[in-house]
Amino acid sequence: MTERTDDPEPGGAPVRSPAFRWDLALLGSLLGAVVCAVGYWPANADLRDALDVQSFPPRGGTYWLCWLLPLAVVAAVVGVLLVPRSSRPFASGFLAGLLLVGIVMCAFGYSVDSMPFYM
Image (cartoon, rainbow, N blue to C red; front, side, top):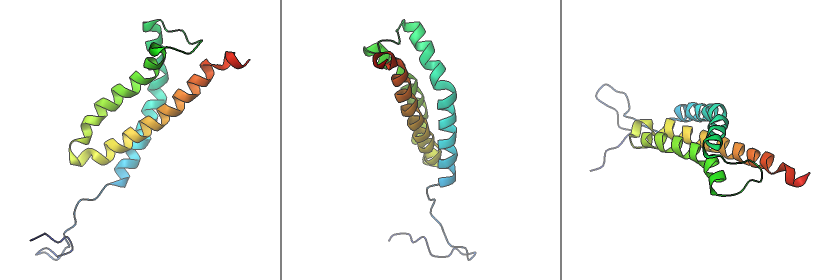
């Protein structure tokens, strides 16, 4: 027999199944966007310096590695939080905010790096 969630408990309060917490998802997405906005550009610059990648002309695997590696590392670390059910709303919101802002920053950075082609 399946358990019904609208039956009252002995105290009279209805039993509620845990739902997706949108407040935690929103908080996670805001924090993910802030983390990306503060740390993504310096991490990219440090990787470029460490790997001796020139910004112009923008090509090659190491160029794109410098853009993708910071996002992949943070996404992998936060992705572990998707396993426990209680942290899924926060972790999914964090990943969404981080990746969306990261994609926008990557597109902007690529356009800046390729700007001398158009001048």
